[in-house]
Image (cartoon, rainbow, N blue to C red):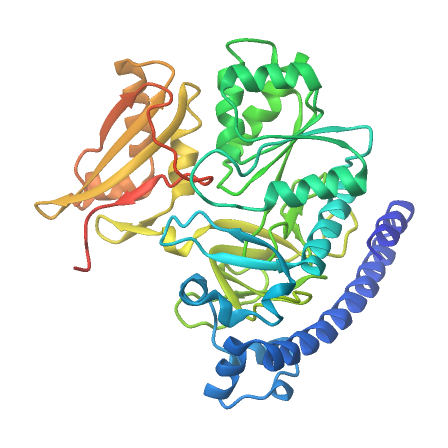
Length: 453
């Protein structure tokens, strides 16, 4: 369906015809989603002890869920439920599982997601289709993958699935290892000449700055970066693309739901959701009410095809919105934009809210900065922000740049200059490599205020 629509739209520039084609494609997709929803609700009720119990506690039967709007009758699930007893979610004999992937456990013990052979095949097929449709990856490419190994104990699964998708299905040569030192990575690139590189945003940003001191990045031949898993400020993406003369595509996924869930197309205007594998709700974090397309809320997912460990209304605690218009690429798949995380929110000063992404956009745009951490403390009724920064240069000029950039944030400025509830931020510069990295994903905001003790 998607390739047909894309081809048809390229041939037909008439606005009315384009709208009709979208309507036809979306109608077919919606019918398919309703069919899959009813199947997974009944399957989970019959096979998953966790969801069978949820239904019975709330006096529900599978037949009570007739539409996507009826999903609100079912309580949401999140990582806390999964951490307690993951085996309660099993909907198949444990002997049928072939893989277990875990999260980084940055907010507690790692969450474990189990997959059958069929589950893995679905993820890999979707990744391969995305590689062709979204990124234009072919068997002529060499793909460098480092995604998940290097820090901590998590087994993320991203690299495993991409390796199979890009190598076994698309036919590209994949070069997969754990994360190497700067010199080792550079030698690896020079030896294998990858055209595509996949890793988390902070890692690619770090390598961009480190390599630029050693070589002409554009001479290395990388044309596409597949990044994500962390906030990606516009300036960081632009710097990566300009430095390498390459395209950087942002992706999104959850270990629990299926890893490779959404990605950008050539127009880079939001990430297309893989709507054939799951349904996406956007809900109000306070009321749980389903929100309209375009409104910002928490992203909640229901899997369609998971055999081993299905999830119904799994709250990611990622804040985002569904973009309420059509993409120029012609794909009838909805797009999402990620804004931050609800559990990443910090309330400071006189009530202003800040997220990691807001600090990323102010600190990481400074060319000399590699990474940072912000520690929140409270003394004498004032919030104290200590910003420790890894920098290629250690001098007062860099320190002042960081301070000025942070103070330009309206939320910080309000507390510092107006309500006087925030002390002057403290900036500490340290050498590259000073931070201990214990997980794939970087946790940059650390709250030590103990506000609710």
